[in-house]
Image (cartoon, rainbow, N blue to C red; front, side, top):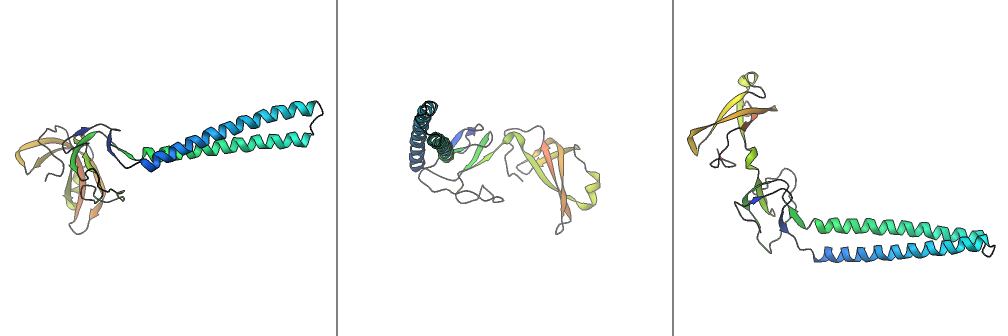
Amino acid sequence: GVEEGSEVREGQVIARLESVDYLASVERSKAAVLRAEADLEESERQLRVAERLTQDNVLATDARDATASRVKIAFAQLAQAKADLAFTEAQLANTQIRAPFSGVVVKKMAEVGESVAPIPPGVNISTASGAIVALADLGTLEVEADVAESNVAKVANGQPAEATVEAIPDRRYKAVLRQVIPTADRTKATVMVKVTILDKDKDLKPEMS
């Protein structure tokens, strides 16, 4: 499995959940599709026979129509079996947790054998119970900064900026203002801005001050 500091690519499997039940469901669904295909094939054979007998005036047309109806039912049953198979295959695929984007594992929260659970929207994944890993795209690091309300009129998207972090006080990073968040913090009389760092290096880490 992945460890802290591991680089992962988008779509890479980073964890596997217990999947025995889902695998069994897929196998049952595959068997149901095979049965439905066989039933359809037999119904179509019976319809061909019924049509010949009807043309020879050996079989009544209502009997042929009943056979045609069975073909339609068999078609519907096959479509349902295929839909069930697609559903069980999706459930099985969901037991493989894949990286949603390429990045670096900055924190690993689960070990083999531990229980995990979906994380509700808005919850900090790096501290959430049940999370597997916290993944960061170090190529898109940004700075979130508060700007006094009185200075908001002086900033605009695309404006050049500089950023420093407390851990490396003598390093000044070139940046550009990407977005001014269109709401204010009344308790601090500030507006948040997001600044994209242009000359990132290996020393710059997520969550630095």
